[in-house]
Amino acid sequence: MVNYESEYKKQLVKNLKEVLFLLDTDDMKFKIQSWADKFGYSFDEILEKIKKDPIFSCVFAKDPAKQNLYQKLAANYIERLSVVKDFATLPQGGKKALYLVNGKLLDGNVLDKASKDTKSIDFAWKVGDYLFFASHKYTKDSGGAQDNQYADIQEFLRHARDNNYKKHIFLAICDGKYYLQKDAQTGSETKIERLKKLTCQNSFVITIEELERFLTSEEYKKV
Image 1: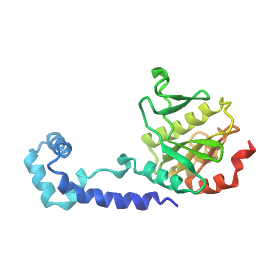
Image 2: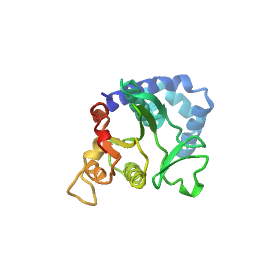
Image 3: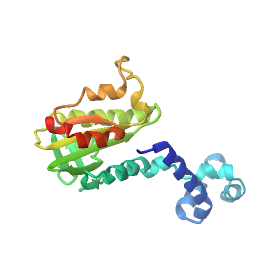
């Protein structure tokens, strides 16, 4: 299984150790100067503080969540499943990114710029002669950014409703405690329960823990 929190902590420890080795990089110098300017200190004062105070150096460590850690963990897990073939992590933008818009799969090269409010598809793979397209979210806490991720999944499922593809399966993989919380609008069902009500004949909402069982049971072939 994918233990997102454990892997997050492991990566965070690595990132903390890297801070001192990155002090001469342009990116780190920029961060230090920005922090110094914001709080009224000199660059050298902050640099010296980082070198002497391990706790203070945590301020300048990279956040693993901003390194696409969760997506990478999910991708590694899916690719290792024995039934999965031709797995691909798709670009998040650009001409080769893939979008689901009003039931149609469109790449970034042909998609109208005005329609790019929808997020690109994260993963694609094959199982037998079926094609799978997945949007993946790991959402732990509540808040504005997290609510945006919830909205992204809803849009993905709504755009899937009008598709007429044969042997195409659209998956919303929703991981994290956030999706087990009550939905603010209904108050009577969890977020993942609400999402499941937005599915169509060939779209599904699952957790990554359910994925292997789902693929091997061939439940999707019943649609």
